[in-house]
Length: 254
Ligand code: COA
Image (cartoon, rainbow, N blue to C red; front, side, top):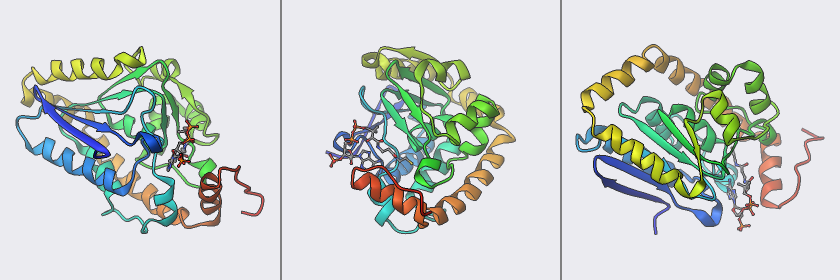
């Protein structure tokens, strides 16, 4: 079965991250599949909203760490950037359902969604510093903007996780529900949107994002250049190797 399930019904395209044995971590192929699906959803008049969801126990463990270690050098043409640029510029409503851990890009992608519904087991984290990396997906811009600088510093410098209620308090999450209901709630909200006039949805979203999108894309490109360089540096290599070897990283020499 595919690692990204794609289903369209009642004007809603639903993308389900489906790689449970690896905690829904995202490979280049999965980013590519989601980027292609978003392009298709943007172009298809029959799709009026998109839902992005995982499993009730895990949203995503972030980027596949094996891909980080062994994958090709990422560029702005890489599948991951095609996906990130796709969600940043997606013209129609994007709704997320998040349960369990949402690590790295599992959290940063949510700042590009229009509505986010979380299971009460959702745990958000952006541990880029702990991995010898820097923020991506324009999170260094969007996280302080939404959460305020000091809360953003806890999340991005310390890499400390925060739970569903805290995410709702800062405005990242619209509603906290039992994990078994999160996907259904997101689907119901997306279907409500899909019943509305598409041109009004698109214009309203465009006006809400106006001015911001160019800043987001510029920040994303700048972060991407640093992130790509840092992936090859000793701190990140130690962090990834330690994860694969199931030990704590030793940053004393980097
Ligand atoms: N990339 C590749 N494989 C991953 C992964 C990732 N990001 N996250 C988890 N996995 C794999 C594990 O290696 C393990 O594989 P194995 O069964 O072959 O040994 C399997 O998924 C289960 O993971 P495990 O860590 O045992 O599950 P857990 O329930 O104890 O913890 C997480 C879940 C998400 C908290 C934990 O897996 C984690 O922290 N993952 C890394 C997150 C991360 O740093 N991502 C990068 C962000 S930029």
